[in-house]
Length: 166
Image (cartoon, rainbow, N blue to C red; front, side, top):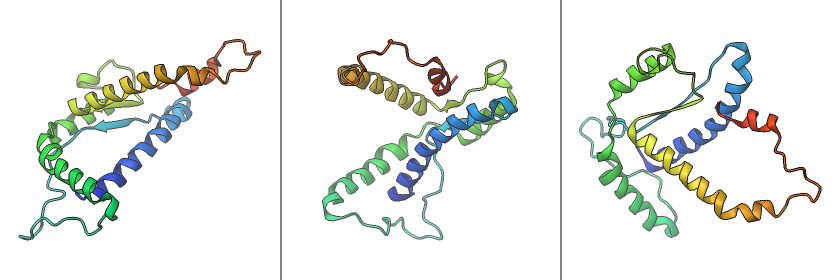
């Protein structure tokens, strides 16, 4: 898979997250469920050469300012990310079906708006949460510097509930 395609997929994934979380809240009263499956790395032949062709670099080349970064990212993808994908596609399929049907490891659990599938995804989600908490702590003084003088100190319970993933 080319780096450009990978980055496009990542952008679509991030955009889909916001919409799916909102959709899940909106359609839940109608008995409709929505879920974000955060699936980790899986080795496939998606980017493999076809019909004896050699694997070629993507047709698109970055500007001169990004050539070093492009090469580094491509190298790291091939030598690190691609070779360290921990997940089995067949097990992912079974886990996904169990989740949808509420069977196996999903039995008796409340429907999630987001679920990690794979240890790499769980690690990345935890890392992101820790980093976001660090940002909140580091910049809380700036966030609090804009409070109205007459604010009661109560965050809207409705807003907190609406924005919650639960």
